[in-house]
Structure formats: C-alpha cells, structure tokens
Amino acid sequence: MRFGARLVLAVITLAATATACGTPQDSGPRSHTTADCAPYADYGKHPGSVVTVYALNRDREADLFEETWADFADCTGIDVQYEGDGEFEAQIQLRVDGGNAPDVAFFPQPGLMERFARAGRLKPASAGVAARAKEGWSADWNGYATVDGTLYGTPLVANVKSFVWYSPTFFRDKGLSVPRTWTELMAVTEKIAASGVKPWCAGIESAEATGWPVTDWIEDVLLRQQGTDVYDQWVAHEIPFDDPRVLQAMDTVGSLLKNDRYANGGFGPARSMASVSFQEAGAPVLSGDCAMHRQASFYADLWPKGTEIGPDKDVYAFLLPGADASSRPVLGGGVFTAAFADRPEVRAFREYLASADFANARMGKGPFVSAHKGVDPANAATPVDRLSIQLLQDPGTQFRFDGSDLMPASVGAGTFWKGAVDWIGGASSLQVADSIERSWPRK
Image 1: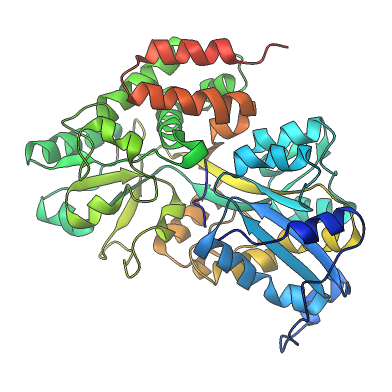
Image 2: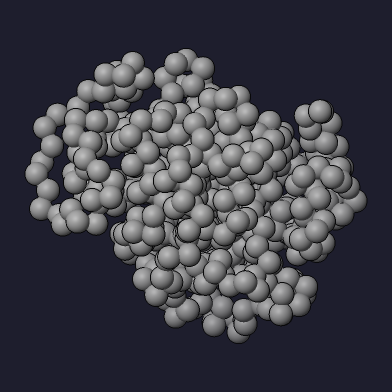
C-alpha cells in the first residue's frame, strides 16, 4: 500500500486559498539558483506562481522530494509549496469538500484517486502530461490512473511489496539458506522457531491506515497460491471477497502471523503487532529477536540511520517465494500524481514529475523505485532498489498492483484495512471476509 510517510505540516493554508481564488502569493524572495537551467527550458517561465502539493510523505522522504525539484522550481520561477500529512487518506476528502483542495495531490491508492475523478473534482491530464505518461510507462501502469478512458494521473513512485527482509549474518550463523519456494520458506520458518527465535516480526499500526500491512500479506499469498487470473477476478469483484480461495490465502497468512510460536519476534505475542507501527516493525531483525520481516522495497529508507543494505551487510531482502523456484509473482504499489487545478504552472510541474529526469534525479538522492522506462537500475541507491527496478522492467515478472489500492476506497482503504485489524485480534477468516463482502458497494 503505502510508502512510508514523512514532513512536518507546512503552513500553506493562506497560499492555497489565494491560489484557489486565482491570486497566488509568493512565499517570499527566491534565492538565485546556480543550477544549469537548460534542462528545464521546455517547462517555460512562471515567475511569481505557486503550486500547492498535498501528500502522505513527511519528514526525510518529503525533504528528498523537495531537494529533487528545487532546481526545477528555481529555473521556472514556480514556488512549490509542499504539505505532508500522515492521515492523507482521511483528510483529502475534507480538504476538497471544504474548498481547500491542493493544486496537486500524490495519491497512494488509485481507488481513492478514481473516486475524485468520478466526482468530477480532478482535472484530466493535459496533452503534454499524457504524452510523457505514454512515453514513460507501460499501458498497465497508465491504466491504473485512467478512469473511463480518461487519464487523470501519472505514476510518481513505485514499490515492490513482495520482499522479505532478513539479516544475512543471522542466516549464516543459523546455517540457513534463502528459500526459493514456499515449502522451503516454511521449513526455514520452522527451523528458526525450533532454535528459540520467533521467525517473523510485523507491525500494522499506521494511524488512519492501520491494517494495511496485513492486507498486503493476504494479497501476496493469494497471488502465489491462485495466480494472476484469480487475483484479478477478486480485485475486480468478479468473485466474492469470501471466495474459498481467498479464505485459503487468509488462513495461510494466519498460520504465520496469528501463531504465537512464529510471531511477533521482539515485541511479544502475535497480537502485539496491532500496536506496533509499521515503521518500527523490522527493527528486531537487527537485534536478532526475529529473523524475517515481510515489507516493501520502500522499507530500505526506514531502517535506523547507518544500517547497511546488501547480501553481506546488516540487512538484505529476498523475493517472497512462490510455489516453485522459477515463478516470479510480484505484488507492488505506487503513488500517482493528480491535479485539482489546471493552470500553466501546474501543468509544467506535472510534466516534470512525469519525466525520466525527475525519476533519475530523485533516485540519486536516496532510496527510491520507479517503474519509468527511462530509469537506469545501475543508479539505484540500494541493492534492493536495484532488484526492484529490474523486476519491474522484466517482462517475465508476474506483476500485480496492490489489490486494496485498486478496490473501491470504501473497501480497500476501509473495511479491508479495518477487517485486517479485527482478524489479527482473533476474528476468523470467514467472519472478516464475509463482513468485507457485505460492505462492497452495490451497483
């Protein structure tokens, strides 16, 4: 689902209101850039203009975004005012309904973005933005941001969710090999448990989005057990949420995450994961209190400062295995840029964000993954980022987008997330799946 989240709230209400009224206010004198402005010539000059951005990302991740577009902003004259909010999913609707919509929003779920598009609140992508989207991404990726044949958004960030983070030193000391099949993964899990260490650690607390790490687990296992066709049918509600094949996937995940013998290493009993933040959940891997943490590629940026990533470093990751060693099912997610305004400076900013130049520049600032065709994996900040980009660019990868992000927002970011918390708390797979099925919007 999501990307981690980081920037103290910027004070932009006055500027956002002024922009909405057509009288953007500059936040103050700009420093004169020493950057080479030639790469930004195609975006034009927009002196004194303001573009407001609202997103989930805060703190360090937000700082890296702002550093990346700093030269673009100085060279074009656009004052990009960024606000990060850890409760983006809950607050964006209130912002829009209250007449305080941002110019640009970074949507972590296509389903949520679709809701605003269908309500007529989003602006269709301009010709320039659409051209960059077609050039940069596959039809599948652009399809996630298309509603009834109209492109509204462009991919900003991608991530591979099907990773298991582990300590190479721990595995070596225990005589363990990286598993290549699900059967081997279960054998490794049991061997670790027999040694007295809980093999899995997890945390599902995420403010208004609490529960999403569990939904990722269920989606990942369903994709491995049933393949892409059944997965697609489930996401599109062509089969019910409580289909026996979905229940099988839930029970498989439950055999790990709801099992006190296997979880929650470093924190307590399995149920403790409901109160552990997803940002902190992998820490016991470093201390040796747990052996494995299933989490997305973006977790590379959440390890404590100084943690080294690599096959012979502090932590590394392997692809959650499928039924056999040759299959490469990959669950992924992404953030999409969409706009509530359609002014020249907004179009210019969106075009820049849709470019390979932006993706490569952001990758040079720190951990970052993009599905843009123009991204060079060799420039990735970490080995896991490099592996992620290679998987996304490999035509043999069986890639599927995060199901909860594609489902109607009331389900994917609503009853599914909530149901996941109830399930960890002791509710049965059938109880939770049946409740989610009954919540699905009826046409």
